Length: 233
Ligand code: SF4
Image 1 (cartoon, helix red, strand yellow):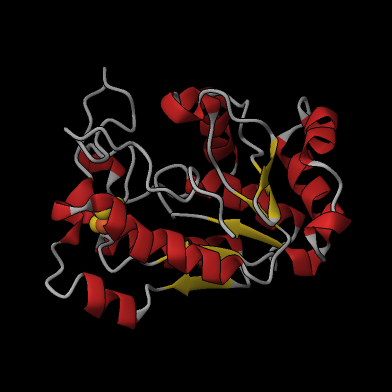
Image 2 (cartoon, protein in one colour):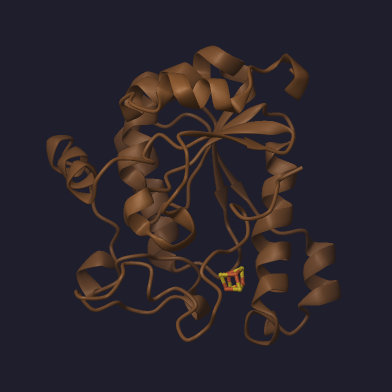
C-alpha cells in the first residue's frame, strides 16, 4: 500500500481525536490492514499498557523493538516477560547495522561525543529499515509527557506512512488504570527509581517532583532520540 492509497492523516485525526486508545488501534488496523501495521515499543516503564491494548485487538500485530546494544538487561528481560504475559506473537528485536557500528562507533563512545549520531545509527536508521514493509505505525507517546510531545495529534503523517498515537490524549492516571486492571507486570527498574528507561549511558533516575523524562540525556539539550522528530522514510 503506498502513501497515496492512504486516507489523509488530518481526516483520520479529526475522526479519531476523541476515540479511546483501543478504538484508535482498531481503526489503524482497519485503515492499513494486518500486513500494513506495526507497533513500535521500547518495552519501557509504561509500554505494557499500549502492548496490552494492541494484543487485545490482535496479538499478531508485529511489534518492533529497537535493541540498540546499550539497553539494560532488565529491559531485555521485561521484553521476554511481556511477550509471555500478553501472548505477543511477532516481536521483532532490531539491532543496528554492524557496518554502521564499526564505521561510526568502533569504541562504543559515540553516545558521549555525539549522541544524535549514536541515536541515528542505533535507533533511527534501524527503525527506518524495520518499518519498510509497513504503511502505518503505532507508538505510545502522550501529551502529558510535555516538551516536544505536548501537542501531538492522534494521527500524524510521517513521511511515507501514517503514525497513530493512541495515547496522545490519555492521562497518567488512565495509563495506571490499565496496569492495575490488567495486572500488568512492571518494568524491573521502576522500583529502583527509574520512571523512564532508555539506553544505559543516557538514562538516570528521576526524583518524584521531576518530569518523568528528566532522567533521559540528563544535563543535555537533547530530549528525543530522533525517531519521532525526523521523518522515517
Ligand atoms: S539513547 Fe544514548 S546510547 Fe542510546 S542510541 Fe541514543 S545516544 Fe546512543
